[in-house]
Length: 272
Image: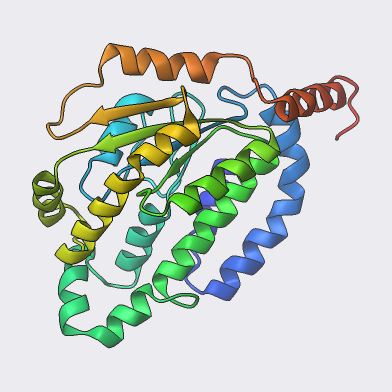
């Protein structure tokens, strides 16, 4: 059974205890397989962070740049990078529990008790979705497979911590910051599959804007802004820059050592 099928089957469990047990039981058997198969994977040890508030169009941008289908809970891009996005799992689990994602804003206003059950961790639907996403990421990291970390970026410290963690594993990191006006973000939110409360969209947009300069400093030359106020094809310079990053040899010295070790084990058939 391949990795994609295992992960797809794993997300079918609705009970959080069952999810934990199932994912834990298969992870140990996958780790050695991932080392062997992952070392020569496209996008190996490359980690791209997507940042942008609700309604910015990150899913559209990811699809344009990487060939990611936002409707898949676990997305595999044409570049070999695997998408880590708890929102996709959240929407899937909402539907499995008979909740239309478009009703979230209405539920928050009219049914606070249900809202808490859906969004308050750890036993909520949102908590389950985050657990699924976390376990998927652990699978990918075990084989140092390329990843796209899809989030809003409204918490700078969270991205900073995630980047440090990835680099300590040997990853080279990049950020694509997807931007749009607040007016456009609000309009898109009202038409998206998962409608969020308007005040949440406004606050998230403001937080993300305040973090823009911090992200530029954190990622340095490995940072690009995509203006998504109007949906349009990705500009050639941005696509070229990202292609070069993904296809370039690994710069991280930890990553170089890991590749050397993994290839040595593979060539000497030390891992069965």
